[in-house]
Length: 601
Image 1 (spheres, rainbow, N blue to C red):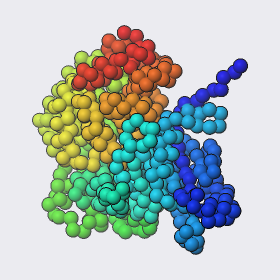
Image 2 (spheres, rainbow, N blue to C red):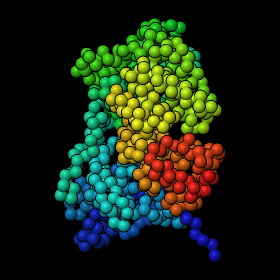
Image 3 (cartoon, helix red, strand yellow):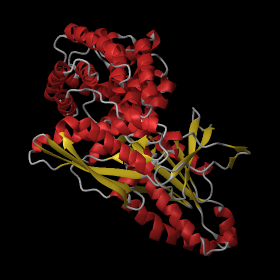
Image 4 (cartoon, helix red, strand yellow):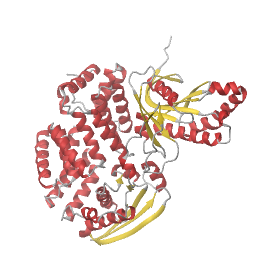
């Protein structure tokens, strides 16, 4: 007799039912059933199909839907509830059909066409907490969807859900459209107490995304130059952290080479303003053009053109940054303008070499990393006092070690130590270099306390740097501070919501939850990371260990096979070469999970 095949996967689950259904049936059984059927057929089912969902089943007044994407699930729910509010506007209050919707993302078990598991159970419990006409979601849904839609999320606090072991943090979706960058409305009274919305100080500031500039130079290989100008403008704008909230480079560069609508960019990145521009280089002459657009209206509110000699590149970039700030925040003080005018190096050639290195670094390939490192040394040779390429070189050494590409680790560590010392000598005011030095100290030398202190120092210089927040998240986890790490990683995801390196943020979340002994959360985050980058070995390690500790040996075996392909030299005895966990109990637990999965000694 054949057995039914069970399939385990990570999905977004939407559960819905009708508030006060028994009362409505008592008032008008035939009319209520007919109206509910019409809403399902004409509204719910088309919206589910449009947003790539699968209607699993209907149960009386309820239904259960599975989505491959959290954003799709929330967008579907928002569309349904907004349309239902419009339809109910013409119906007497006591006759209105109002849906309650709950959404959770988690591990489910699929049997034929049905689904089971905690992912389904939590969604059903969240639906029961939702207000009539409202949507309640778990923290994991909020983390994924925040900043992707024109809604805000209001924190309803921790709830102990029936038959769910651990409390679940619940968020209510604010259905009224929210302008990009706007703060959520205050929470209403919940269970007799007012629950405040989570602090989002950055959203109260004017928010801006600097898009990749067009390279108008005839040579295609000059793209690095236009990209480097954008990096410098982003860094320049980030200095105005009390006035502006700046989206990180890795999110905006996902749009490179694409024709995009600024309103779409505003919605996807949750920003009020978009800066577009172009760079034309002809010999030693340089022209930078820019236009600032209100993303909510697509109306241009400022444009200008800046021309000069290549030697004037820093002055030109500062003029662009200054003009944008002036257009956004007229009351900016002259002293803050002066800080943005500081020239990081007198050597234009050194800066050009650094910009080329940055382009190769972002290929995330072994060959690209080698070229980036060579160009960093070229930039340092041209100007030994320019701290930024030191920081990028340190990032190269850290990535080379993590990826297993270091041919001579002792040599790399000695060279990284020299670079760190040099940064602390010449570049304490350079947030990029300081953060990279701190991360290298923790990653390469195991000096996590010193590394964390330097990363904190960098965040004081630029609190909005998403890459630095990710570095902070990893180091804080290594120190045994997973809750602080999760906070930093959530900030990074908010700052850079469509980052090409989102897999790294998800990997950090997986490791933090693993250290916090939340293995199901760790496994879910590791799978999310691997959906974005199937070759991220740090995420595979957490998937293996957490699955084994949860008793999911088929999943552990599957991911162990992948881990052995990605890192064939990994053994339990040399695990410390890959992972810096300061606390013995964290190291032992990771070893225990990998041993259970079958990693050799």
